[in-house]
Length: 153
Image: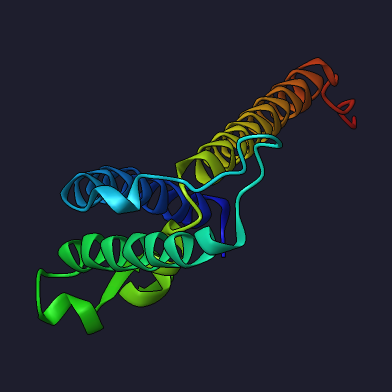
């Protein structure tokens, strides 16, 4: 997979993640018990009883991510089993949903790194092209300075 494909993939996953996070926030407002973390007031640690709520929120996040990815692949219901196409890569919407479940806080730096790598590659190509043009110009200038062979009498 090339850097351009990786950059496109990370950008799309970040967009899915951002949209899904907003959708999860909406779902959590519909069911207030999903918003209330159960923590120990003395230590601030999450209580074991809160694990089920966390698992439900994680399942909702995955479902929201998968549904959001499905809209990119052609809508509901066909997109649920569809693919998101990239140059040289096709990603199932379920996998895109799973990747987006990691959250935008995870994907935003990855997009930044991919952009930096892409810019670095572009600069490398530009520098190589400039060096090649300079070398060709030097070679032509050298040929112009070579005296013609002496005439034989």
